[in-house]
Image 1 (cartoon, helix red, strand yellow):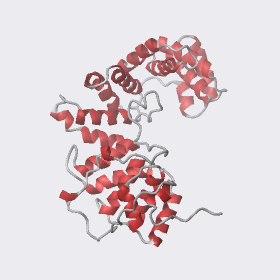
Image 2 (tube, helix red, strand yellow):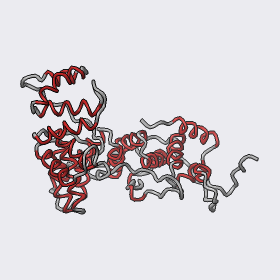
Image 3 (cartoon, one colour):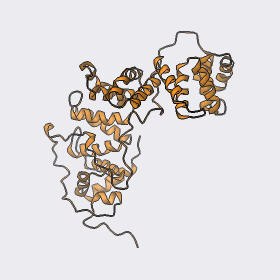
Length: 361
């Protein structure tokens, strides 16, 4: 026998997520009346009001917070300033993709104690470029260069020591190297050392101790640091007014770098008027971009923005698509379930097709 058809008392959300337990049917809502809500009546988009996931469903990601990203791959650094010193033939070969030549040129220098060459050899071994990948050899050369004071290797070797990857785990030495690399100006190390301070000193004390490192890292283009800086400037007590006034600009820089949590927050801040004036159209644009990048909370919010014509024209099919995506991910929202109940069958079918075709960017 096939599956039983949904009963009249089964909600749309239960049909989407596959829940068997029926709940009392709610009244349907009229999706659109052709008019946008007045600004003073716009619903707040603060993520603290996010509905919980369905029982047994995969909990949706609200983006990755800055602590979770410690030691993870970071966005690429901004372009370096033009180099006016003596050209390095080994690095030149590396940049042109001539990895075997780079190894042949760098290895003799590395063996003589050149920290820049040691770092290059470590990178080639770590990534299997021109030579078979060998992480133990990479660890050896990173350590040599770190001991010689190369900030890139200090950062890389610090992560190895923290994780116990190809070397014995040594948290104390790892933190010392991370701090030293940060103080020497490595942007990734500055972000990670700030994370260590926050982890070791929870609360505002740790955030304020970490703030100078977040600031330096943010200036170097690390999106995670820019996002953290925006949150600290906006939410921590005792921040000067001139710094607080820049919180939104730092958030937008992180969003522009592709950090989906920053894009979600940029949408919320612009629509709710946090950190500056309201801009509904720009807020919608950032929220939709976060949704397209797979952020489930943003997908939920975009559905509501389409329903209420906030920053965009009303579009029942688009609203339905984003509602379906967030509901399927387990983010239960009675208002969206009621909205889907009220859509004509042909629009539900269009929304389903669009949701099935969706792939995160």
